[in-house]
Each structure stands twice: as C-alpha cells, then as structure tokens.
Image (cartoon, rainbow, N blue to C red; front, side, top):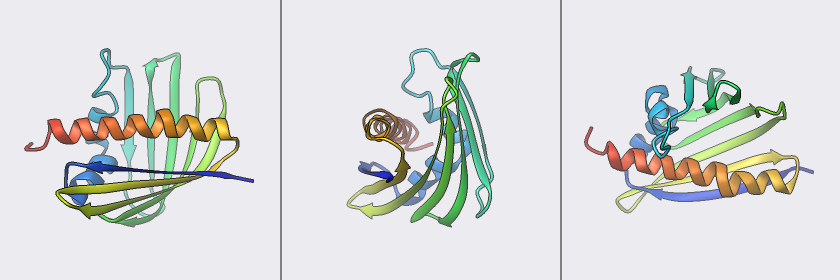
Length: 150
C-alpha cells in the first residue's frame, strides 16, 4: 500500500513566474533559504528536460545534509510538472515518490497543486504535509513577493 498527499496554495504571481521559481536553480537557491535566519548549505543543479534531473543538496551544515534527485517525467511549462523523486536524509533513510504539480491561473495569481504519492507510512506523509510542502509553499511565496518586480 502506498500513501498519497495533496496540497494547494494560491500564490501571488503568474503561472509562468511560479513555474520558473520552482524549476530555476538560481531562484531555488534563493527561496530554499529565504526564511532562514542563518542560511545553511544549498546546492542545486537543474537539467529541465524530460529525462533530465534536478539535484538539490541542503542542510544547516556539511554533517547534516539532505539530498533529493528528481527525474523529469513530464514538463508542460507553465501548466504541469511530473517527477520521480528520490530523497535521502542525514540518517541514511531513502524514499522514492512521484510528484505531480499543476500551476493554474486563478484570479490575480496561480493555484499551485502538489500531489505526491508513494509514501511508505502515514507519519512520513504527514511530515511532508505539515513541514516539507508547507515550508516550500511559504518560501516560494516569500520569494515571489520579495522579487515581484525584479
């Protein structure tokens, strides 16, 4: 049995701006740590093409790094993005999930919806809902607000 989660967030930018903030390595390097008082380590490389990968390494220090590699399965800029994600935590735990993200024009912004499937246990799924994606949405929104006219 696998477990899924679905989250949505209204963001104050066009679908193109939100898609690019989510997929552009230089923009990600900013929003990954935009809310941190003490920025840690953020290294990101993106090859945005079907079959390409995005690799992100981040954490507070070199001894506490998380790593995620996403392989792009579908890319329909700026509407939809599907990846297979394999992540590892500092304790050595690894997990592979499927992530589907849609970017829909909605009022004066974009409704970003994330569906992630393949969680092995409810506790990990709930952590991703309450911490990982809630944090990512807050960071992306802070980036979009701060750099709206840049």
